[in-house]
Length: 224
Image (cartoon, rainbow, N blue to C red; front, side, top):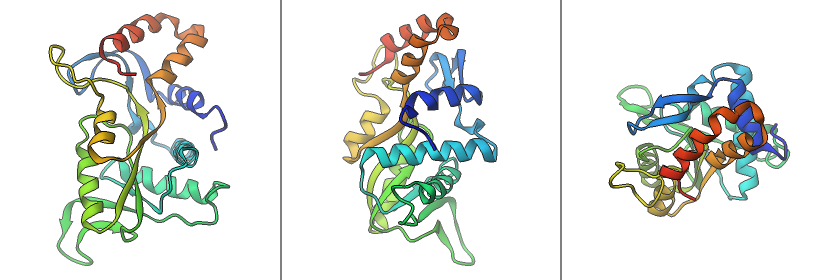
């Protein structure tokens, strides 16, 4: 379970697992980023188990009231599943037995059919994913949840890049995370953010060679 310094601990954990790397990376927006976060590299039982502990701790600390979890296909499926297990072990939620569900990319036309797997969507639902880029996954998840008569309560992600969207000559004033929060009127909770990465770099000389590049990138594209 993550401790009271979980934001910094999560950044260190991501570095240890090779999930967070520094260098030069072309990201989905086409920008060249001095850092890259690939949650798909949390790919062992041990790393996913610890990751789920960070998700559970961030959700509990947020104080958001919720009834169940939803994992959008595909990355959200193991994240929601593992987080439900971690919540069962968390002292604040161990007595609640939090249910979870996820969707299929294509509707199943046999057996139970439909696009949903797991517990029925009801009550206040937390959407769990790795990051928010264009917000497409969140939009689809919100539609599914509301169509089922449930209420999206929050989005829980691993890392908030705190990065403005759009082309360099037409940058948005908001990040993808801020846009999601404003569009759907729900909070977005992150285990860590770019600010936490910068805080670690400020306090650890071994990352000094990358600090200026990350700071310049934040100055150009970042939001507060």
